[in-house]
Length: 349
Image 1 (spheres, helix red, strand yellow):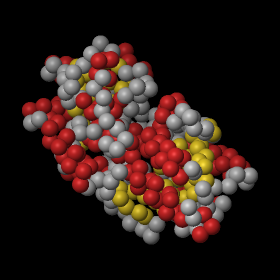
Image 2 (cartoon, one colour; image 1 turned 60 degrees about the horizontal axis):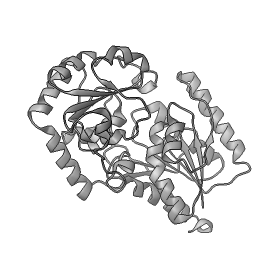
Image 3 (cartoon, rainbow, N blue to C red; image 1 turned 45 degrees about the vertical axis):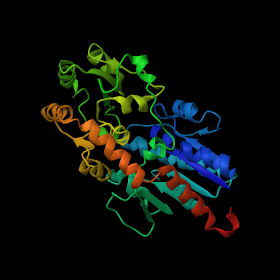
Image 4 (cartoon, rainbow, N blue to C red; image 1 turned 180 degrees about the vertical axis):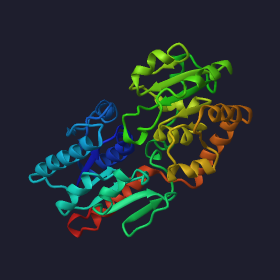
């Protein structure tokens, strides 16, 4: 059994890491891993899956034309490689490139997705993937669409794989619920091209006035001088960023992935990224995530969270949902990959 895993975003490492470990340990699977050298992707992979070999392939580009050429170049390199190396199924989070390679080679691909609103990332591969697996909260149907109850982030934040460790708080001199975690993403990615970097600057003063310490993760490092007098700025990669999210009073994030991570760890989250994502609406409906679009709304929402002990509500809601409703997403990954392979009689396990 040989599986091709394509990693093109840093969050892909966390999504697949537990499935990769289980496939190797319990199924003796042969796994080829391709990684796009983008941001901290390769360092994160080495940290999380340091014992596994991988192939760095392609170059990350920020312009639309550059991305198109980059996808084509990676695809050609993979096609060239697999003229000599066979595989049974290909997988990735988002299928641009990898689903096309599998389709050309007449091999199945299982693609995981939660962002169909990003049309440039979804529609170019939609017709080429053998199977597209997405949360049931996304209103999209089709013959090859498979739904599950849950979120991609529960592939690594589910209690089966992660338990918050309070020891990390000592490294930053903070106490549980006495600080706020802020994540500000870069505007070089297409999803956030309209984001005003530094829009949260006024909020820092407001939080300090309320007595909160601030821990900030800044993708745009040029912002460090603007914020360093008001907060603790993390130096990535952080040893245990999810424990920091878990113990914070609340999170303010312009990145949608970290916004969901925070919610699923039981921490209320103010999302400032501006995107209206179907997968986020379920969290909004449960009052776990609060989408805001301007500074006054942020401050009003902060007041609501603090005055109404929303942290307790979120922790209880998430705990109950994980126990009775939401699936372990790593098991979803394993089931879909193994079922796809077993559909071919010559590849039955």
